[in-house]
Structures are given as structure tokens and as C-alpha cells.
Image 1 (cartoon, rainbow, N blue to C red):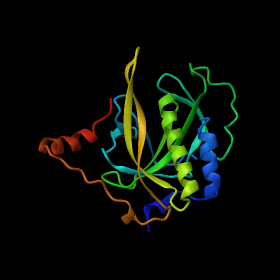
Image 2: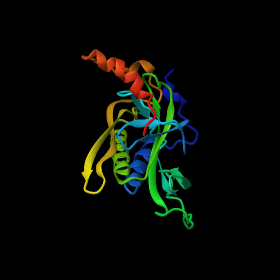
Image 3: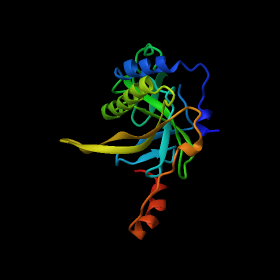
Image 4: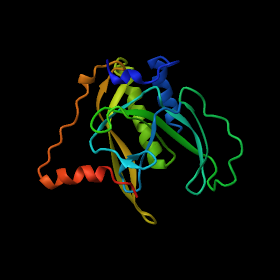
Length: 220
């Protein structure tokens, strides 16, 4: 039986309702997972309190029922408040933002995912973002999943690689933003054999020696 079936499934909406929620709610902006994943300022994907670097070219299953939207309030390097609900529900009501939050409440979206290959196989993670580039990437991913579900409701799970792109800001220099490369689609109860682990061709032996040490660095 596939590891995908371990996604929490209580009270899941029908896939057609899910498709509509993704398309409607994510375009405007269930907290699941065992670790927090994010992309750092250098464009590397990391997870956990130690900011362990995620293995390059690992593949991740996106739980299509886990998309959330809501609001977050940040102080100086400190989370002051977070209100998140499933995209099948309206955005949560807000009270006054914490006074220590200079930007007040910011809209945030996210989802849960599970690693399907490599060192981190079976690791479940939660990714949320309030940045413009991050929200655009999640919204685009949600739209792709929504459109696929409408056409192929039997394979709602997107298998992706976690990537990054960047643009130049006149004040802050190079700004990295997350991107999600969809490699395949599978059902919620698909067999593990349907998800192929990536084959990495290393032409330079020095690359093979450098990769393990680099992936477990503490992100700056």
C-alpha cells in the first residue's frame, strides 16, 4: 500500500469540490505535517528548527486536501499569531493585530507535502508563505492541481520537485522565490512503485563528494 494513504483523510471533500475551492480560494490568497519547510534567502529549500537542507531533486507528494489560507502576524523574527483554515472554508475573521507586528496581519497560504524519495523519504512537511512570490507560486500550483482534477479526478496528487527562481530588486539585489516542478500525477492510493526515485548523473566525481556535506549544512 502506498505511503500516500497515510495522509489524514477525515472529512475530506469530494474532488470536484476540492477543485473549485483551489481555483476560487487560492487566487485570493489544517495545519498538517511534522516539520516546517521553507526556502531560505539563498534559494535553498530547508526544513526544521536546524534548517536542514532538503536533498536536491528529491520528489514530494502534494496532499491536495491540505491547502490552507489565512493570516499570519510576525514580530522581529518571531511568530506572534497565525490563523489558518482549509481553502474549502472562508478566510478566518480577524481581531486587531498584535501591537508588536509592524506589518500587522499578512495573508498567507500553504499546503502539506510528503517526501517520496532519497534520505528524507516519508518525511511530512508543512509549507506556508506570506511573500508575494511565494503566494504566487502556491496559487499557480493550486490552479494546476485544480485544472488536473477536473480532467483526471482519479489522480489528484501532484508529485513535484522543489525548485527556486530569482529576480533582481533595485534595493535588495537578488530575490529568490519558490517554484514547484510537477513531474507526475498519482492517485491517493497509488503504489510506491509508481513513483520513481530520480536518477542523478554525476559527471564530475567532486560533485558526489560535495553533495552529502552540503545538503546537511545549517542554512544561513
